Length: 510
Image 1 (cartoon, rainbow, N blue to C red):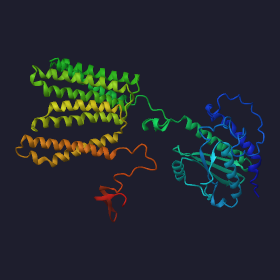
Image 2 (cartoon, rainbow, N blue to C red):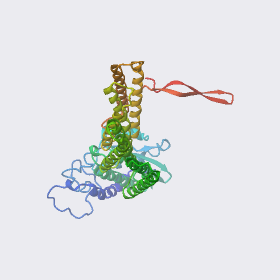
Image 3 (cartoon, rainbow, N blue to C red):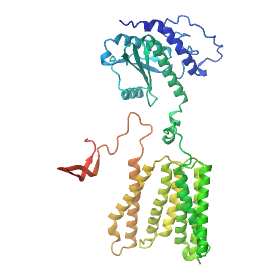
Image 4 (cartoon, one colour):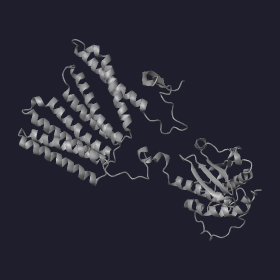
């Protein structure tokens, strides 16, 4: 017959003595009263075998400084010690041992400075669902301690799970010990779990000062390779270096191939060498490389288009000056992008946003020039140039401040293009046969409105949930399902199979 009361007798003094070193380590210095005398040297506590009375300051059961004010980390924390869980086959012969362990853990929790709440204690000894345990701790902001025992011959496997309202995961300790050592190991395991919780809570930043998920959720066990964007940067720099050599040859007014090919080779070589040096000097990610690439290509395209649309007809030799204008735009873009990267590393969503800003700005700029001229038959070269320059500049500046994902950018781009094309198709009767300037402006306005409306709707649909929402995610706009076009079944005839295509509805029935 197992005598469980030995857990209450000789183990209490050992448990309290084991808890004292960790408690002294985690109690903050501010918990001691001002001007307190130097504490006495440690010695055997008097009356260690007797439980401290409620509200009594006890040096054996409380850490130094806890008499006047409790530690800020755990003294005021409400705690629920759940009944020790047992397997169904061990319920009868393990019940006395589990009852004694319940009492021991409750006493140890109080000795550790926790406030044990017996009102919410369940009577069942079945192991609680861990997801429900985390949800209970999160909703009530209390500390839950869930012990469980597994009888294995002369040994016992003890499992302690601790769920805290401010944590995102359970803290679990599992040990297989002899029955005679169960009391000591249970007290030490609970002490270690509470000490880890207090140290983690004091080291964690406040909720309002948490880092973005891109930094907070990054794994710490693996070190990412340095300059992962070296190949992307080298490819963009090599191509742009060749374009610079070609632009220099064209802007000089020479058509001699003996000058063209050396300039192409020199420009490409300088671009490749510069990219390698930059990647060795700084940690260039793939997002950084694409962000720099957008700063080279879109301003260069904008410089060509602006000059061709605004100044070419007034120039004596427009071909030479157009290439020089492109070089000026590219140099300005690269300079601005380098300043933007000095603020911090670029995310993949930010790099894609810069690329998207140039393309969408080019489209909107062309629509604006069409609306101003009232003539959709004429190519809006200058408007596209101004739109590409301003769109890239606005998107590149926003990319340094916004925390956006690449999927969100792509979704907004697709929504904008579909909205613009759909509105242009619906308003296309306005430009049939010989449209007037008013009809052409109305068609352009409809296309631009559909463009902006599509972008706005997709942004609203894909926007992230509120950061402060608790107790589950917000109701989704597509909670009733979505239409599905594609393979909805399979047709089988003997040994031959063929997919069944069609239109269906995928989702929960309201």
